[in-house]
Length: 207
Image (cartoon, rainbow, N blue to C red; front, side):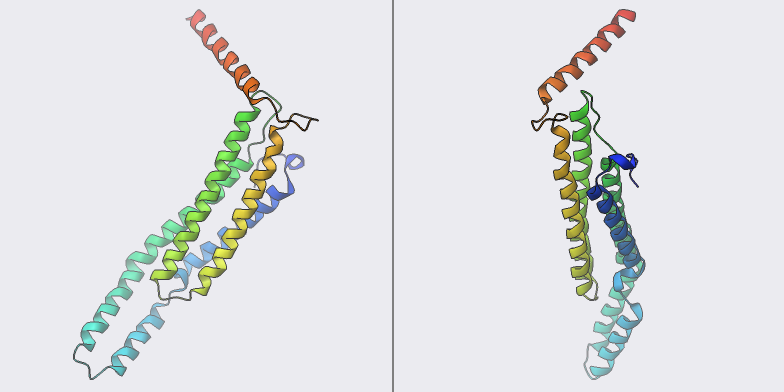
């Protein structure tokens, strides 16, 4: 949940935060269920292949390769992708939360606060795109239902659009209070620079 006071948050920020949390929950369950992979079903398919091709000279060689692949899925690929996918969705959630917790103040630091907020939201969006690609990769490698990917792809795209909506709405922070014009960013930066220089000079004088 965002640390920004309730009265100062936008509805889009609330809804986006909720949708990201929901997506993270669903992806976590999906990963915990081994991305839909069933070792039992896979081994039954191998046995069926062995039975259907019992007269083939190389049937044992082929089925052993499939069995080795099954072990690799279970012992290496799935645990590795479990960490990878949950790491990405966690990073996305964290980045948006950090960005959404920064509320630009009516001070010369407004532009830098807005910029920090935007950077975090941009990171969250980029993590979402990588997450979508990673789930696509998992579904391509594992013998599972590809329709599961399409479902998550749509949900990730929805969350991305929500985050982009928050980012667009944030442009209001660059407008002067009660004015439709953007704030004078150069003036704000200059004011902050003057303050920093004054602090440094004062520190030098006291040393």
